[in-house]
Amino acid sequence: MKVKKSLPGRIFSVANSIFLLMVAFICILPFINVLAISFSSKIAVTSGEVVFWPVGFTVNAYEFITKSSAFTTALGVSLRRTILGVAVNVMLIVMTAYPLSKPVSQFRGRNALSWYFVLTILFSGGLIPSYMMVRYTGLMDKLWALVIPGALPVFSMLVVMNYMRSLPAELEEAAYMDGATHIRSLIHIVLPISTPTIATVTLFSFVGHWNSWFDGLIYMNATDHYPLQSYLQTVVTNPEQFFRSTSNLNSELMTMLALVNSRTANAAQLFLATVPILAVYPFLQKYFTAGLVLGSVKG
Amino acid sequence: MAKSSAVAAKGGNRMMRELPLYLLVLPAVVIVGIYSYGAMVGIVIAFQKFIPTKGLFGSEWIGFGNFKTLLALPNFGGVIRNTILISVFKIIGGIIVPVSFALLLNEIGNKFFKRILQTMVYLPNFMSWVILSGIFIDILSPSNGIVGKFISFLGFKAPFFIGDPKWFPAAMIFTDIWKGFGFGSVIYLAALTSIDPTLYESAVMDGANRLKQTIHITLPGITSTIILMSVLSMANILNGGFEQIFNMYSPSVYPTGDILDTLVYRLGIQQTKYAVSTAAGLIKSGVSLVFILASYKMADIFAGYRIF
Image (tube, rainbow over all chains, first blue to last red; front, side):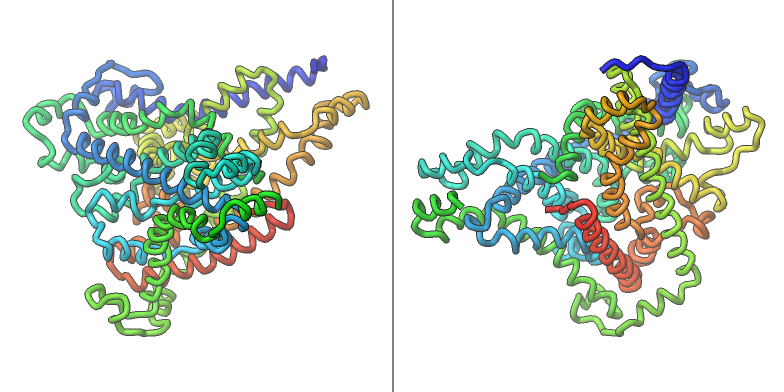
């Protein structure tokens, strides 16, 4: 539909485009500023010359960070907790959503069990009781502490369950007529057509695990068990600490201290920590949108 | 019900047929049982003089003593006020800004340009508050941050946004809306695309301009979504935004920036006053439960929305 625009209409269009472009830039300029700082020389950063483009381009900060054992150790923990965590999440989501998507006639426990999970969205024990449960079950200071307590993301499970419920019953009926069990039907019929929804919750889970920091902060005693975001949290809230902790600095890093400062080093760390998110960002845009609509506008 | 009879005819033993379904749910039932329901049982700490070594049921019961201790804290009233103030402004801004953005974006005809704008504004939503706090602490720093430099360039004196109690709540509200508005607009954009295009065509025939179309077709078309999102966001009335505030606040801004969740953390994890912290957490969960139930009920009444 092509509508010819009046003069005020055209003025509005132009003004609107410029305004929205400005808004969009406000959303990404902070990232660009940090990126520019991370690639700038210590001197340029200290004298405040860096805005949106690196001044005195250098990769010293990145070299410094990747040689620091604190950063690389935390990165390793993050990778492990994310891979393990996402695998556990997705497995439990599917295993739980499928039975709950069955009509009561096929699964009598459906309604009671659905409420069992939904109630946990409505009410929680709070910080200390949850912390105590992790302690009592012996997970403190172990990688599992970051995986098991949140093993079933209930909201994601509901999204998948609602999707499975919306599938036409005929799909599975034919399989049942041929004598297939529920498990066979799940693997060969339901899972393949649920791929987009499962992709959505997998991404939810990936972003959730990669970004989470609070559990690492409270459940890990040794700082070298911190995942990346928990480690960064300590760095961000106390920027000079990274520099003061000489235990972390070997002689090679000591000599590099002349080339970086806390601002360039922190900027480099912050940027590196967002790389995985940026890598999946195109998929996020595609599937998160679908997932959000799925989750909110119930079918 | 053709399906159930088909199944009944096929499977003789109903329980045997359902057993695999129960086994599939079992692991999640156990884990949620321990870490969610177990933690709910753990709330009893709030009514005890809790000593970790004595355990959950070995500690002495003291009724509402911990709640009295909590209410006697000099800053407790302030914390409640801060929490509600910050969350209310976040909720209001979190509706108005995404709706406005969606309406303006909807006026962009060029698909490619629209896509670029969306790509840019959705980005902050996927970053953790640790990363964003690191960025904001740097750019909002009055001495060398770019925001400060921009303000002095305009001829004003840059305030210390996250170190000054006068500015701290505003900085939290603004940065929270900044993070979420782009992605928050997705739901309204989805609602906009579902408006029947023939409505616009007939409006054009009747000589309605874009503004009139927006007021009479577009806005009514997304009203139910706006109501739904407003009602659901009510559930966040006691969520000041722990992850954000915890990473940006400092003792100097406690008078205006300390919220219930940060207080719960400091009492519980830092000062190991487990019982008092649990009591504070219970007040939050309890009040939130009422708001969540009310919001779900209203969402069901006004928009026919149910979570399952």
